[in-house]
Image (cartoon, rainbow, N blue to C red; front, side, top):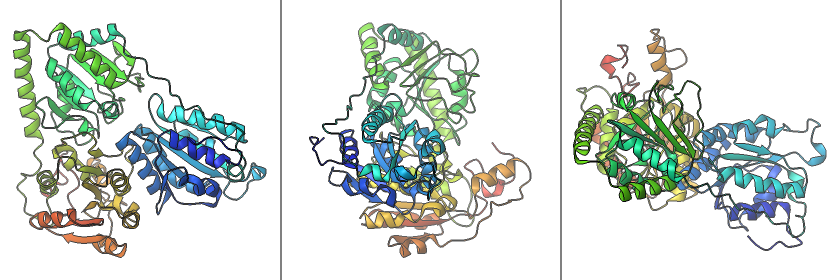
Length: 564
């Protein structure tokens, strides 16, 4: 951070503090209420990316934080801008993504007088964030920024919101003011707790590890693999964290949540010992809070190992610890004490091999005998698996189309999957922009349904303007497919408000300066995909689907039949 100077403004103090906290990118739709801050971000070393909508900008910022582990900044204007961004704040909180949300506010003298676009930002939007504040003078700004950094980056990361009056930003910063950005280091896991967990897993008949974003955030996927190998314990990924372990590893048994293969929940329920590592126990991850089941022995190591529901079986151990620190200590413990006895090891390996074989059989998505109209979504995903490099980043929108990738795509490296655990539509394209900004040398592919793409496809122009490269796959069945699925499950099947009209998505992409290609059969897809991957700009591949494709659990012929 530059040395404090007598001419430094409050805005520059904030910008310098953000840079010192690791912010290198800010995403925004500009507004007059924060021009003082916008003017100095570049001087502080922060690159500004202008989006077409505050929701898109927020998705970009949150996805950037989740993918890199480094915080981004989101700048939006008072009331209307913050309202548009609220979906992204909620998503960043659900994803435990570090994010600084800086919201312009009306001038100090206008506050509380129902000024133009005035709302209480902290009360209205702050509840979506991990923490929020509205400092009213320069001294309070110093304290608020300091607290914001600790809240965003300390413990379980998340979005923090600062409401900043536009005239406050141009005031002089307090003379000699510095922002203390020191973060308290998480306490190392206690030796006896590590020993207890190792013994819990080692002495069980069919143990399992449920691993989530905390492992990714700690950069500990290799350590997770090593620990699992030492005790021959299979690993199941929490929802939309399928990149936590190489999916080709023989101890990987799939991902929980919506569209999980039929083997995942039974295997979790069968575990007589469960380690939850770096994961919050959300509704999708636990299959509606069915895991941990009654009577199940389990331990929870996470930065915030709180129980989200009183219906969960209490953990034997719930330790606030970094997943990487735990894994290193646990590996050391097992290597020092020795692994399983040969008889125990042989029995466990036989069980694990059978479980892996069952999971592989349950994740085949491209062999359905169907030759109808449009593309087969499972075969599209199988082609992606064959063509994309192992370090390709796949972003997925909310929607049933994502079930084919969730079930059938094999993630080979950490940091290759981006999907909103909030279930927010419109995420995939902004997330692809963020991924391409963070890793311009890597392949980025976004998967979106026609419903989700229709919400944020204007951000294609952002990608064009920023000179980015990524491919967007639009799975178009002219429906809000997930909701249509629920209508079918209710037995009504009327399609109220879920039937959509046609959009020429390839044409829209071309109008926005991107490439656009329409594909009507999977035979056409591979050469088109290879052409798009070689392009120097964003490309949309418009995949035409039979309208009856609404779920990975059905085919058009079985639509309306019993759901699995």
